[in-house]
Image (tube, rainbow, N blue to C red):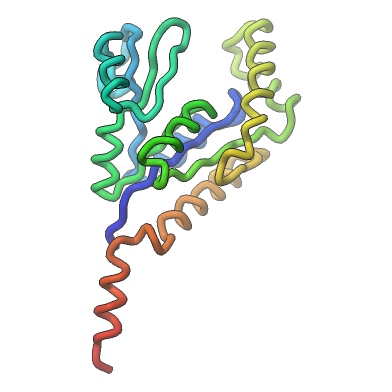
Length: 209
């Protein structure tokens, strides 16, 4: 049955498994689209415009913000990042869900937008802070100082857990993925999200037995 697409917000402190879970969801359901952010930073080697990011100028970015064309945006290390609204609305009309890999601030902005009624927000927690630090160190990408900074920031991220519809403790990646799939399946089947359900039931009631 026809339905309007959802905006699925996935947030977590760094190292809790958000990006891995997002990739697994995309592999599980090819109809899901990932929200490609716009940014004012220059492309890095190998990055493709429209695939990794929508690369744009500061002037064009701020014009989109002024015109209400960004669902959320923020400045990070002197560059602007944001989620363009038009592709999300197009996906919604087609009944396709959009997945957002954003922090709690981005999640707040999306929920407060005109599309907030279509949001399903999920926060992923680590099983413990020592385990979170172990995962960050296992990446082998960051210095001790960077890891310490990420751990300090994680407490601030975690403090916003109660703002989300669902909260999952990622103590087992496969089980957490299974629960994410269950959440998405259930949210898609909610009565108010099945646009053709009323007409279907009406026709059903008019059938002769």
